[in-house]
Length: 84
Image 1 (cartoon, rainbow, N blue to C red):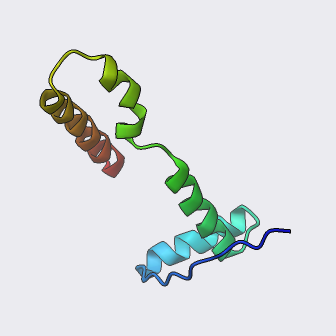
Image 2 (tube, one colour):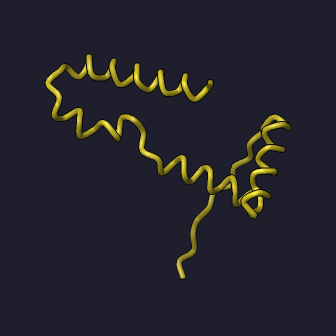
Image 3 (spheres, one colour):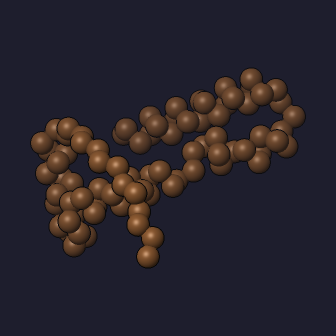
């Protein structure tokens, strides 16, 4: 059996966010720490836009600067859409 090394992290959240996390954890039948660990793990394993576009980047004939600007604009647009 392999022992997993862990890291302890303390975060301070607004009370309404903490309450929402607790509700969602209960709904999923998980302890709060397990629920938050799942959220963080899922997010960390999700590829970034840059990683997703890495192969495309190699096959495009525009300059790296122009492509970077386009990717950055797509990222900004996506983040803005998530806020809504």
